[in-house]
Length: 426
Image (cartoon, rainbow, N blue to C red; front, side, top):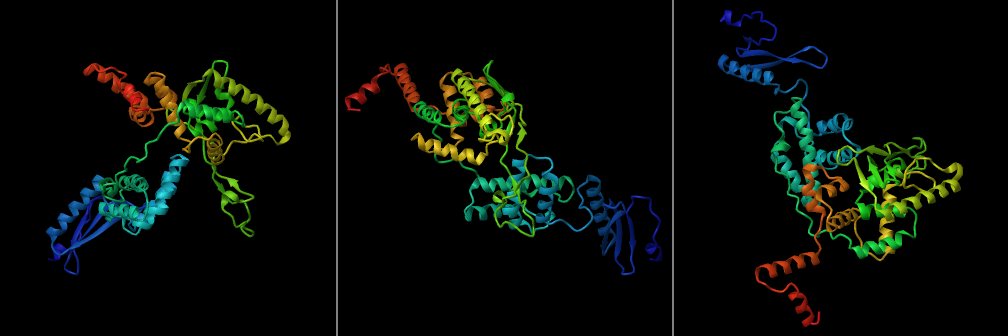
């Protein structure tokens, strides 16, 4: 027994196993190094040597595979999510992506599952959270965004050894159903009514770029004159206008009491534009002749506004600006769109619905799919899915196809349905 108790010197990296004074078997397993560079060892104890050896071997295997828990107090899910979103995700993702992550973490994930230890989080905990979110009024898409955020954050935790499994990757996210109301693109007649109205106001070409070519809001507001070639009738899209984000500029001793966006001394903390990240998004788009004329007229009007503003003019090279030359706010642009619909007596719709209109018009004109994909800025891998989502077949075309099928199979005259409508007084 005395010999069993005696410790022997071990080589670096070897586990030490010995019988302690408490008559239990103990082991010190080298696991690597702490943040400060000092060795880190795990202490194990079992009543029998066999049980201890089995546990030591299991722990050594985890260490060698890189899946063992790291030294220090285990992370809670909440602490890890807050650390991940601020220190790991924010420096490497776009501003919009970070905003989505930050809201999902702060509003849903930390309050819902934040107290769990990260190495003890189970898929069922997340699935329960998704159900609670929907029971409390959140849409399935909101719960799905929380799921995607958790999956990304926990995947990084697994990669760094803070957890053995990604619970979010195992959890079943809520199913996101298609919207019940199908997007109905604006008809040619509605576009023409809008055209009559936009000709009465500033920045008229801005709306026709959306309706005729399907440019996204960020692409249009981020467009600079250097990207427009009116002589050769095309423009290049390479950057997006970002939504402004502000912080208070007032002194802490005399706070204004308003939200940061309404602070009289607000400071913008987000860049105005970002380069388009996808190759499909960076594209050349042909300009129809009437739109070239609209842009030429718009440039002349902008030159007059620059002269009228004098020293107040902000020379930004943006195609669409405020009266003093600064970039247009996406929020202001959205409300201008709503007023435009109202003034033109056209049914209400999202600004993004104009993109559906443009894609459908291109399809009706017989433009090849590959050209539609380039104009709309769709990636080759997802172009088929995007065409299915954005290109809408009007009812009159479906009826025409039905008449042709009737004529081919049953020999029915293609005008049968029309004649029937006329007989019924339709």
